[in-house]
Image 1 (cartoon, rainbow, N blue to C red):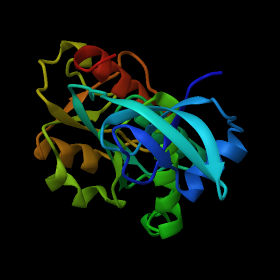
Image 2 (cartoon, rainbow, N blue to C red; image 1 turned 135 degrees about the vertical axis):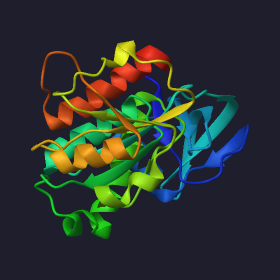
Image 3 (cartoon, rainbow, N blue to C red; image 1 turned 180 degrees about the horizontal axis):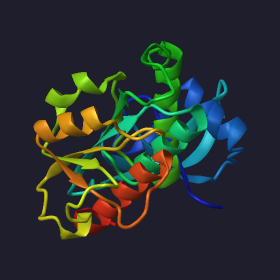
Length: 241
């Protein structure tokens, strides 16, 4: 049986018997159809992976025997992704893949050429759905730390939130490629544009705020692809890929 990596929305013991709460129990027993003896790994976002085995059920809740825990290190490069608001499926795909690739935080930003209005993105239902998608992506990728999805804001309000070196994707720039940049240090902020690209004014503002323009080689990538490709390159250069 393949090992299951499952989110548990509670504190976990280092070892011993543990009763999962209702929601993850339902996912484990009804969706994943785990059976007695199934090996699995639990995580709750604290960075530890808790190895266990399904030993039984009690009142529709799964009983797990936790044998040990081990700390899974995060990437040495903390990537804070400013992801532009995009149409539903495109945004969802970028969000999922960015999480799988190990970003620390995702800041949704509304840009001038975005087709999704900021008021739409700020709905509690949508933000809750995004966080659920992040947890699902962590389950798929074996992550034990859950990236935060910050409340959506206009790009003009985000500049003060930059962490570390700032990079902005611009296919028209003559600046060096990512591979030619010096080591950014422990963390960086990456800004990618929406379907219509970043406006001239937004690129100028990024430069004024200390963001360095970089390009992804001799090509223009779709909005949902560019951010993910850039994160993968950054992880390969200075992270853990």
